[in-house]
Each structure stands twice: as C-alpha cells, then as structure tokens.
Length: 387
Ligand code: NDP
Ligand code: MG
Image 1 (spheres, rainbow, N blue to C red):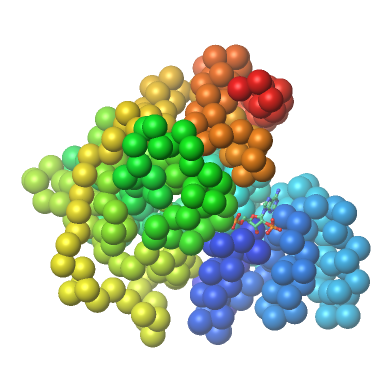
Image 2: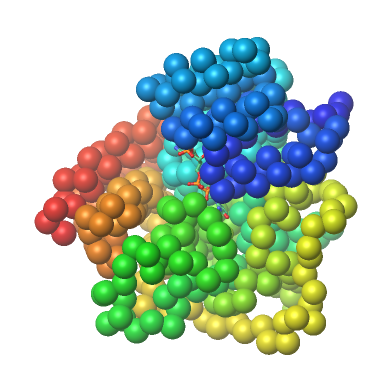
C-alpha cells in the first residue's frame, strides 16, 4: 500500500475518535485523516478538520451543516450531513481504513457499506457485531476487508493469537475491571447515581460505554463480539474480573498454555496496533512498568449482582434478532438513565420487558435488523415512565 494510509474516522469527536487522531498525528507520513465524521459536536469537528485537513467532513446532525460549511469552505474542505452521507462516504476511493468509533446502532450501516467496498476496518463499534454479528461475518467472507479489533480485550486476544492456529484454542478469557460497583452490595446498587456510574475506576471513555461497564452489559457485548470476531463457541468464552485492568485478556490453548497481553489501561495502544495493520509501531508514550504492579487479581464474575453478563449466552443461544433487541433496549434505557428518567436497576428491566415483547425473528435479514431496532426503541421508550 502507498503511504500515507488514508483513514476515515467515524465518530472523530468522541473518546476513541480523539485518540485515533492522536495516533494519526504521532506518525506523520504514515497516516492521514481523509474523512472525519461526527454526530453533532460541530465545534470540535471544525477544530479537528482545520488541524487535519481531511478531504471531507461530515456531521450526522443536519441542523449543524451550515455552521460546518461556513467554517470549512475557506479551507477547501468538502462538507456533508446526514446518516446517508455518512454511509455513502464509506465507499470513497480516498479511504483505505475506516475506524468505526461511533457509538451504538449508528455504526452498523456505515460498517456494512465499508465492508462491501472492501475497506479495512479498525473496529471499535462493538454494537455492529452485537446487533448483526452473523450477517457481518457472512459479508466479510465475500469481501477483501480485514477487521482488526480496537476494543482492548479483543485486541489482546488478536495479539495472543498471532502465530497460532485457531484450532488450538481451548478458551478465550476476557478480562473485566468489574466497573465502579464491583464491591457494592445488591442493596447499595438500588441507590447508585448517574455520577457514581460515570466514575469508572480505570478507563476514561464515552458516557454510554461507561454505563455499560457499570452494569457489566459491556462484558456481555464483548463476549458476543469475541464470538463473531474469532469464531469461537460461546461456552468457550469466559469473563474474568481483573480489577487492575493490566492484563487485557487471555487465550488458553489445548496444551494448557495461557497467553496474555498486558499494558496500561490506555486505548492508544490497541488503536496504534489496529492502524498499523497489526505491526508494532515504535512509540515514546509511557508504557507499562510491571514492577509497579506487585498484585494482580483475578476472580469469577458475580452474576447475581451483575446478571447482565449472562445476556451474552442467552442471546447467542437464542440467535436471530435477540442481541439486536437487547442492544436497542439498552441504548434507550442508558440514555434515560443518563437523563435521570430511570434508575440504574431499571436498565435491566427495560431490556427484559423488550425481550418479552418484541417479535423474535430466527433468520433476520438486514431489513429485519432495521425493523427490530426501530420497534424495540419505540417500545422501550413507551415503558420508561411506568418501569
Ligand atoms: P463517545 O460517546 O465518546 O463518542 C461517540 C462518537 O460517535 C462521537 O464522535 C459522536 O459524535 C459520534 N456519533 C454519535 N452518534 C452518531 C451518529 N448517529 N452518526 C455519526 N456519528 C455519531 O464514544 P466512545 O468513543 O467511548 O465509543 C465509541 C465506540 O467505541 C463505542 O461503540 C464503544 O463501545 C467502543 N469502545 C470504546 C472504548 C473507549 O475507551 N472509549 C473502548 C472500547 C470500545 P458527537 O461527539 O458529535 O456526539
Ligand atoms: Mg473493552
């Protein structure tokens, strides 16, 4: 490939997006941001565009389009708005790799379009594989796209599997910090606030994934993500609580060997690894000093306190549109929790009620996922005031 590698950053204004632009700046000549996409934060998108000079900047929220155009036209940067423009842009010839750093269901369509256009994917948006893992995996078999995970656990597993044969895998061990409520009792969980849930002990991330980490649904999503990324059956994927977040995940092999990848809890490393196409790019950034950690702990997760972890196995056993329903109900419930409309424990109730109500589809097409997502969001919204 000719350098610089041209990168589309989907969700450039968010936590992963900003760190992706850090990596692009760290290696001038190697990477270039050719397309930047934001949801509604037009001020940050303008600032990033003036610095990185992409060919195209897109704002999903059409009401911010004029501001973007006025600010970027003096720089000769093309602008667009709306979700169709985001999906269409994934086919542009001036993109080699798409970093999917948007949050939630909105990542699905552009990722599918990028795969169909044979673009490489640095996959942060785990919801894409949660919602439609089977469909996306099928599409990948007909595409030249390569998917490299950005999620730290999956990047760790990917790194552990380099030079190995996937047939030699006995188990995937996905580590979990346990989130801010690891040591709280079930009674205490009834009273936790939004501020408590947003105080993640180890990772600084966007609000939605921080709440998913507090409920540990994030770990369920990561089990589903691992199932599709690595083609491993769910009963061979386990979550392990590791409060220090230094071991990012492990693979146990058939001969009893266990490999782990370690590092600081800092997403720059997995992003750098994914952009570098799984090569080791030298960095002067701070790295792990192992003697600072004389005590690394590992526990089985408490699924009585965090029952949402089990939703992964339920969804993978049931198949069809089950995980799509869970994801959509969770997106509505988490947004409502963040707005103070429902309590922490109500998030699970919204998901369970949606699973009872929304029609199960055994072999969903893309259109079925779209319809399931809409129907679930509508239903979940309708029960928020009575939950
Ligand atoms: P943030 O909430 O910080 O950022 C989300 C980004 O997506 C923002 O740029 C936002 O724009 C943009 N966006 C929101 N809605 C749309 C839309 N409809 N169309 C286009 N862009 C949109 O999230 P994170 O960076 O934390 O997470 C991104 C993804 O990466 C998630 O799927 C998450 O699960 C995954 N991930 C994140 C990790 C982390 O450390 N943060 C770790 C592992 C995985 P705007 O700013 O304008 O709203
Ligand atoms: Mg993760």
